[in-house]
Length: 245
Ligand code: SAH
Image (cartoon, rainbow, N blue to C red; front, side, top):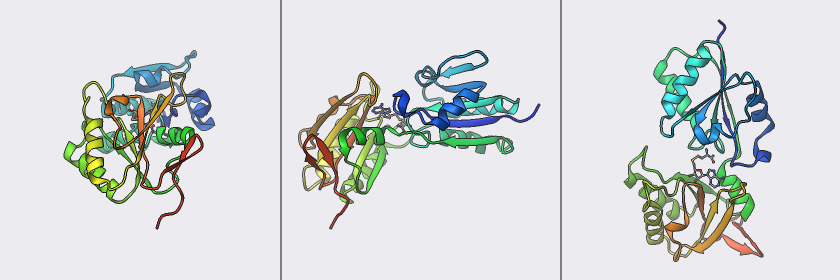
C-alpha cells in the first residue's frame, strides 16, 4: 500500500470563521482525524471519516498513532487548537518522527492556524504591537524555576507577554505566583488582560493593573496578556505603540 500523509493543523481559537481555507480543505480530504477529544469534536463528521479522540497529555503517543495510520496509507489530520506550532501538536509529531527514525518517507505537512494570542489581541486592540513573547505557564514539561526566570527576564526586557495555560485545577496557584514574580521585577505597573474563550459564545475580556490582578480570574480557557511599560488605552481599546526609546 502506498505511504499516506500526516497533516498537522491548527483549528484556531474556536470560531468557524477563523479556520483557514487550507485547514478546512485538509479536513475535507482526511480519512482519519487524530487529536485531543474536545478538538476532534470540532471536526464535522461525515461518511468515510474516522475520528480518533484521545486524552490530554499523550501527545507523542497520539502522534505515533497518526504515523502508524499514515504508514498503512491513510490520509491523517492531527488537530490542535489555535496554531499547531504554538504549544501544540506539531512539535510532538516531530518528536515522534525522531524517535521512530523510520518514517521520513511519509508526506508530512504543518498548516498554521490563528493562535489564541492573535485572536485575543485583535479583540482587545493591538497589545502585541511591539516586541513580545509567549510563555506557557504549565510546568508539566519544564521546571517551575525556569518559568519564573523567563517571566523575570521578559519583564526586564520590557516585552509584552502572552501567558498560555495560565491556570488549571491541577495548578491553581501558578497564575498568582506568576503575577507576584512579575510585580517584583517590574518598576512600573502594567495592564493585564484576561481573554477567556475568545471567539466562542462564552467569550469574556477583563483587565486589571498588574498591581491588583488576581490569578483566580484565569482558567484553562484563558489567555493572559501583560502589556509592556508603554501599553495604554485609547477609547475602549488597548494598544502597544510601535516604538520604544
Ligand atoms: N496551540 C494553541 C495553544 C494550546 S495551549 C494556540 O495556538 O492557541 C492551550 C491554551 O491556549 C489555553 O490554556 C489558553 O491559555 C489558550 N487558548 C486556547 N484557545 C483559547 C481561546 N479561544 N481563548 C483564550 N485562550 C485560549
